[in-house]
Amino acid sequence: MHATSTPWYTHRWPWFLMLGPATVLVAGGYVAWLAAGHPDALVVDDYYKQGKAINQDLRRDRAATALGLSLRAEYDPRAGTLAGRLAGPAAPFTIYLAHPTLPQRDLRVFVKPAADGSFSVALPDLERTHWQVVVEGALRDWRLAKGWDAVRTLEIVADKP
Image 1 (cartoon, rainbow, N blue to C red):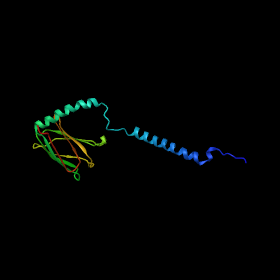
Image 2: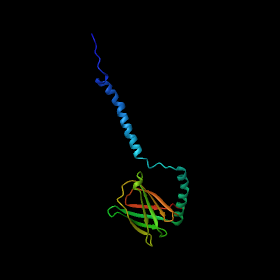
Image 3: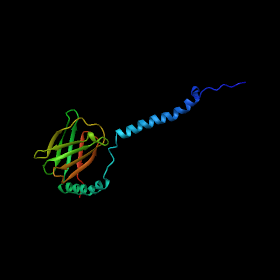
Image 4: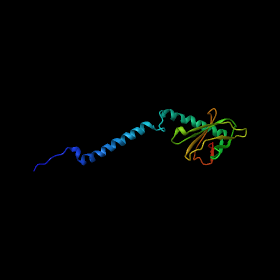
């Protein structure tokens, strides 16, 4: 009896065994493309400088406490407005809304309140997510900060001394 051998590529088992590594190579290439094209926005380049800035932020929090500041505002998604009142000196301030994961969706709104501290500003339709809200004076001399789930009421009170 004479056994005739056929070339390896005519058998299905070598192809079946190569399917696993080939799949891993394709998936690895896709993951590498995702990693290169969508960098992580949460990584801070200069963490030491950011850490030093925390002490400055704490001084601004204490300044807000000394001024007795508090903010109460209502968000109306239908009208696209955030209206409320800043208790304390009626001076211009900034409201910064930081999206938890997408920095391109962050919002910064300059507010010039009325003499009694009331204000109304236009906002786009906000996602229902956990926003970080920072309200600070125009000269960045005080700060109020709090997390907010974009439900209607936003209330921030400076810490008690």
